Image 1 (cartoon, rainbow, N blue to C red):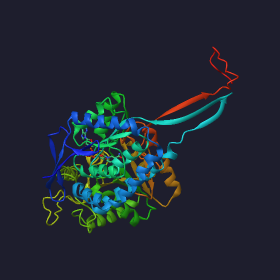
Image 2: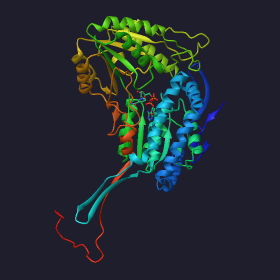
Image 3: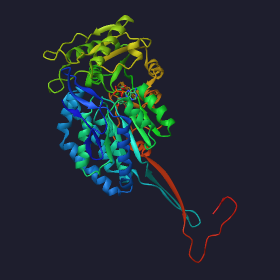
Image 4: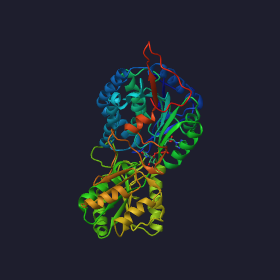
Length: 498
Ligand code: NAD
């Protein structure tokens, strides 16, 4: 059986690792590979390689860095099929959905191709007599990324192209559940001309993560994953003096007003709730049906949930694959049961779904629960599976209050034909990313991505301009070049005018 290796200093290596974990094929329930789990000595080796590479990469010209990014962009296009198939095999999502994440990730590389513009400083001539001030940004050094299973290509791509284009070197600790895509990315970077040691991959579990969080050679940590781990990463890495951006979990609400096109809203909600088996941080997992919209919306959602084609992601005819593990499947089933016990109406029950020929796969069908209230566990927790709950609200203000009372604040959407309602909503919700008749409002790479409240710990959102700020430090220079014949005088008092 294949054992997936680390990638350190330009080549695949086992380093000193001996522990391994299974990599499942979620569609068959079989173990398809093992992945190495790094010890702290392996993390040391990766950080040391990155630190050495930083000596030259941090001084490389912007032209050289962007040349690598332009080539990387082409390679990601050429290898889209290979990457998509690996993602579908290890994650379980359908191949077309995997292509989608590769394209959205590639857009960050495209932004990094323009890093010369993004890194432009400011210049103020003659701030005092004979004195100019200018600013520029310097890379931090070795930076680390720790990423979740649900977007094994896109989420790491939110981080490393920006970090590397800014002149840093990178150590990635991807999810141990679908690790192979990161090694393909490392190989493509090498092919694109990135020097050895600039991009490294260490596979592992919490031991590798904690070693990175504590490592004195790591300047900054970008994390994306569940809220409890995001909170841990933020606390531990800031305690060791690092910059941290830690993106956490979500409970994304879609508000549907009675004036919305209900058929269209139901189409979008279905795709956004059950696409990728609900395992997206921007999945819509709670529909808030306002006023008269509720009964018709629930009926339209039920029809669509029952019609979702579920099966292995490698089969292009399917719309939804399995969830990531047997535990994840059982967890989703447990939430359907707890919702029912706590008084919700189970309108569509996905627990009994069987996929012929894939009986051991980690499949659970789409579920729809109505009359859900904020006290129920199925509403309070992030389920991260194909389960959509419907909460009923009397009016838009009640819907906004509900969203604002929720501890998460990643994404939200409103479906309406009323501009005033949309504007009230977009200004009033305490959520980082808002869609108006757009179900999954993931910002393009020229903006930054991030939630509020328990969906993000730290000050900066990820990629785009805030990513550039995160991976660099500003420096401001005040300079005077006195005339050789007229040296500038010095004064003991603090300068107040010039
Ligand atoms: P996870 O938190 O279990 O794992 C994320 C990473 O942390 C992995 O690399 C994992 O190895 C590591 N890890 C896990 N437990 C750890 C621990 N106790 N100590 C240290 N490290 C640990 O998340 P997941 O299940 O892989 O991904 C799903 C979660 O990620 C969901 O909550 C989802 O909402 C969230 N997510 C958020 C965003 C966002 O942008 N906010 C994007 C994608 C996913």
